[in-house]
Image (cartoon, rainbow, N blue to C red; front, side, top):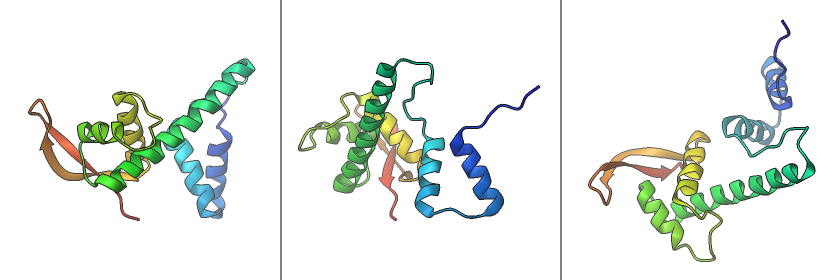
Length: 137
């Protein structure tokens, strides 16, 4: 039975691991691509699907930037507070739904840009929620 084929990014990461060389920004870009799934289209999909995937990928990146900016402006907050603050950000936001905002925050946690502060706050329904914070670099 044939071994499953790796993506070009996985092949490149294996080569880096074996030989120990790469530019830091190249490593970060590949790690981000592997950690957080980007919208994609199959090779067999029509060009319209590829165009939609590129447009969605741009929105995902812009959404992550906006979530990071919100944490920079407001500091530590729960998801509920994040949604409230994002809806009131000047200049409009790319993310239109609460779910989209939480998804971008979750991706930023996986990327090591946002972390659990160790604190908890009560939400509007009286439930304890994680207080998130931006990771200082």
